[in-house]
Image 1: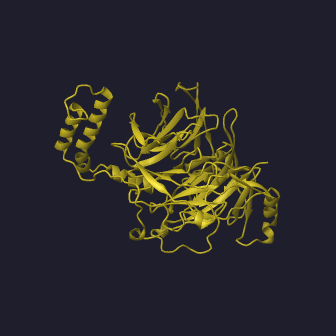
Image 2: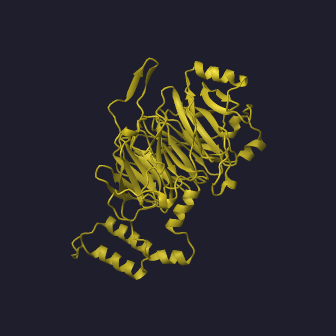
Image 3: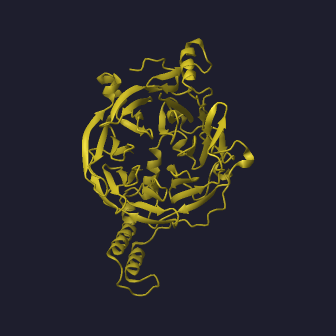
Length: 502
C-alpha cells in the first residue's frame, strides 16, 4: 500500500516512484522530493481551477456561424410517419415512381419509419426517449464542472468541455486561454456536450459531440514554428499565444447525418480523414468524411454506444456498447464482429502495435485483453486471461472489496503507463505497463489531489461533491520525457502529473 502522508500532493513520477509535497508552501519535509524532481529536470505544472458556473445562460453570446438548421422537435403522428415511409420507398429524388431503390436503402427507410411509428408507443409505455438517454449519459460523466478533456496531439494544450456546454482551450506552455472571453466556445447548436476530440494530424480542428450532431471548430493558429530554441534547450511553440492580439478567431461547422443524433463518443481516424460518432440512443455509427462534411450511417445489432477507439494504424475501430459487448469494425469493408462480455465494457484502448487492446468491465477490478489473431481484414481474435489489478496493490481482501470495480482506465500514448479510477475509492492509481509479450501491470502508487485553498461556493449540488475524488483522467498526446497526465477532480481543479522515465 501507499504509505505517504494522506494530505500530500503528487508532484511527478520519477522512474516508477512518486514524488509528493505535503504542504502548499514548501517545508523542510518536502526538500527531498523537490530536489529529486529538480535533478531529473521535471516540470511541475501549476493546477488550474474550473468554476462550476462561468456565465448565466442568457448572458452568453451567440456566434453567427454556422448557417444550419436543427431537427424538428415536434411530435409526429404515426399515420403521417407511415405515409412518409411509403413515399420515400416508392418515389425517387424528383418525386417520380421508381423501382430502383437498393435493398439497403429500403431497409434503412423501414427502420427509420418504424422508429417514428413506435415513438408514441414508447412514450406511452414509459420507456426512455432518446433525449432522456442522452441526459442520463451526461449525468454518468461525473459531478464536477469538467465533462471531458481532450489533449492536442502535438502541443501541451487541452480542450475542456464544461458542464454548461461551453468549450475552453488552455495552453500549459503560455498559460493562456482560447478564446479569451470567459464564455469560451459557445453556440446555440452546441447543447448537451458529451465529449471532444482534436484532429490527430495536428490540424487546428476540434470536434465536440452534442445532442444535435458534431460541432466542428476550426481555429487559425500560427503554425510557422513548431518549437523555440533557447539557452535552456528546445521547447514546443505554444498552441495558444500569450499575446491577446494573436488569439485566433474560431468558426464552427455543424456536422449532421440524417436520423442520427445524441452523440456520446467520437473517434478520429489516424490520418484525420474520417470522424466517427456513436450515439447515446442507439447502436448506429455516423462516419463523416471531414473534407466533404458528409456522413454515412453504419449499424449492427446492439445498444447505445459508450466509447469508440481507432487502432493506431486505422485498420480497426472498437465500439463499446452500454449494455455490454465490444464490436470490432474492419474499416476498409466495414465488416464487424462482436466480442461478448459478461458486463458492460468501457475504457477500451489499443496498444501501440495495433494488434492488442485492453478494456475494463463495470463492477469488476480486472482488465481484459483481446489480441487480433491476423492482420486486417481478418477479424479473428484471441482472448487472453484477465488481469486483476487490486491484487497488485498489496491490498488485503477487505480493502480490495471496498475499492470496488474499475470506473475508468486510461493508457499513455506509449502504452507504458495506466491511470485507474475505482468505483468506491477517491484515489487515482498509477501503474507501469510492460507490453511484451502480453501487458503486465506494476503498481506504482496513488496520485493525490492538490488541496483547495478556498472552498467552493455557489455550486448546485455541492453537498455531493468530494474534492478528493477524480471524475476523469487523460494523457497528453506527446511528452518528451515520458508521459503527462491530467486529472479532473470533482472540486473543479485540474492537476497535471508528469511521468519521467530515464
